[in-house]
Length: 94
Image 1 (cartoon, rainbow, N blue to C red):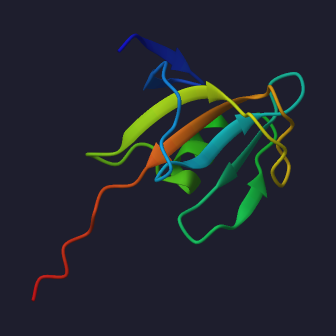
Image 2 (cartoon, rainbow, N blue to C red):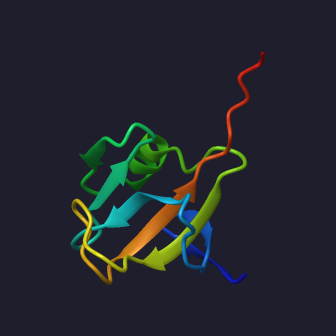
């Protein structure tokens, strides 16, 4: 897979799988929105580092992909570049 950087995050240029969820996307002129693991979406103006931390894209083992949205989702237009993430499985420690 080809890799690239988007908002300071190294990501694979590939279509997301069904297990990927939108994490960070750019809106207008560099402003960003981010979505965390609980599904809460927040606006971060130009604070890309805070958006990455909120979405959890800097965690180890996350499968991060960069692809355009194919359909409209909350706050995301079709064709908009989105950083998708498949979060690592957390062990229960049982």
